[in-house]
Amino acid sequence: MSLSKDEVRHVALLARLELSPDEEEKFSRQLGQILDYMERLKTLDVTGVEPMAHAVRLRGPERPDEVRESLPREEVLGGAPARVAGGVAVPKIIE
Image (cartoon, rainbow, N blue to C red; front, side, top):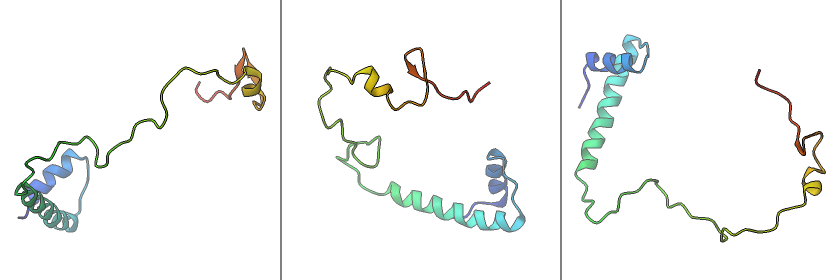
């Protein structure tokens, strides 16, 4: 399958891209190959394959989420270069 140059120009317009005539020709072939591959994927039997939100399974936390004693404030702030109102002072980066 090959996309027409008009179709490539339309996609380029939607993507706010300026393409040279050589790029239009090149992308016409490449986008056609991608669409051909997508058609091949449609033929796969995915019966029984559960839909996924991610390509790999995400693992949950390694430890239970439970309330524990936190570090003492002075120990946490001990390495801070500057403090303000009981917290760490950081340089202002947004006006």
